[in-house]
Length: 237
Image (cartoon, helix red, strand yellow):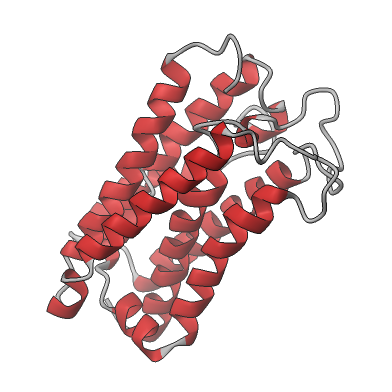
């Protein structure tokens, strides 16, 4: 835990994490395929277990111990498993069937959580837990994705006033914004790969509950964009 951090910051971030989980399960439950909808409960339970595991590891200071280890522990036991699941889904026929059955509108609404994430990052910066470059006052413009998501979902996927190409371009731009902040966060975290922000490093993600950002929220958002891009390239809206 980060000492002397105002209670509202971890509380709001915790609520944002569970909002991300619920929005993801809501997306699955709204699939047109019954076989996909039946997966909602086991996926919900599995993700709760994953969140609990990450909470235990973080509270035990596992990610903060031996900061010179390579690769960084949070990458090895937090980020890598999530990335492998995404790769598995896109590389298997059952996984691709699941991906293609998810409703694009619901996936797009999911990105709203990025607004709260950006506010939390700004508050963490004010409390010297992340560098300025990880906020919208620095190099992080990811808040654009969160603010624009409901408009793209409503006007593009409910009212059908935006073209498929426009929604595709929006997803590609927002994916780029996500990759940008992920790289900046990685290279500003205390580890052998740190390249900048030595005066105020990114210590937040090594503490509870903020470790849920790289190990859960980012993979869900990444999966959302990759799913949307695949569907938009494969099918007409």
